[in-house]
Each structure stands twice: as C-alpha cells, then as structure tokens.
Length: 150
Image: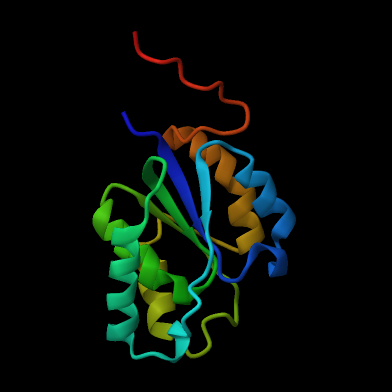
C-alpha cells in the first residue's frame, strides 16, 4: 500500500521563503514532500498554457507515495495543485492564503478557495498541518515506520 503524503508546493525556493523554519519542520516528517516552484514564468503565461504545462509536470512527478493532501501558499500554484488533484481525486487541497497575494490572480484565488478543504493564513496552515496529517494517516515525526508485511 502506498504511503499517504502531504505534497507541499513551494511558491519560491525554500531558502527564500519567509516561512522557511516551519516548512523545514514539516519536511522532517516522513510523509511530507516539497516541490520546488517552476522555473517558467507561469504568472505571465496564458492560463490554458500554464494549466497544460502543469498537467505534464504532474504526470512526470515520481512521488514516494500517494497524495492525501496538496498544500499551496500562492494562487499561482493552483495550476499544479489542480493537475495533481485530477490525478489523485481523493486528496485534499490546503490553501495558505495571504491577503494581497491574489492581486492579478483573483480567478485562481477564487478557484483555490472554493476547492480547498482548509483555507488559512500560511503560518496557521503550517501550524495546523500535523493535526490534519494525523487525521488523514500521513506519517509525521512521531509516527514509527511501518513494519514490512510478512
């Protein structure tokens, strides 16, 4: 059985993220993986092109388990999140929404807000993640590794 995962889509490289410390803490959990942002300027592309590229990226991803949740911290990440959710329809979307981040991306913000199971400020979302991870069966720091089946 595949390990349930939290896939955290980063809006910028981890070292440049203002929430680097809580993200690094989450990444210590065996059920959490982070995906670096695209090098392509998706914010300046037509939406249909950005969505198409996201579908291709989602197909190429080799994750160490099955996403139970996909977390985003910026509306532009909804392209890739949506593509991952289409491939894993039982996964939840978690949206770390910051006022002002939606400037110019109101449609993506509205779509992400509508689809999200959790919508909180980014720091609050990262703080609430361990509890929701436990509810979804996503391994955390305190979970022992699964014993191999005999």
